[in-house]
Amino acid sequence: MVRKLLALMAVMMLAAGLFTSPALAKKCKKLCKDTIAACKEATCKPLPNHRRKCNLTCKREAITLCKSRPETTTCSPSGAFLDQSAF
Image (cartoon, rainbow, N blue to C red):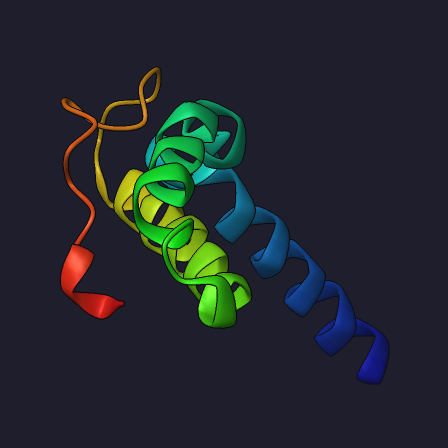
C-alpha cells in the first residue's frame, strides 16, 4: 500500500515537472545579467551603507519580472522595468 502511494506521488511529481510553463524554465539570471549590473551601477553605488540590500533587491526584482514574462529569450522587452522606489 505504501509503495503504491509513493509510486503514485513520484509519477505525479514527474508529470507536474513536465508540464511547467516555458517562462519558468528560462535562465533569467543569465539573461538579466546586464540589467542587474546596470541597476546595481545606477542605484546602489550612491548607497554605500545599503549596498548589499540594494544589490539583492536589483537581482530579485529583475529575476521575478523575467520569470513573469512569456518571452524565453530576453530578460524583458526593455531594460527599464525595475522599480527604483524600493531603495
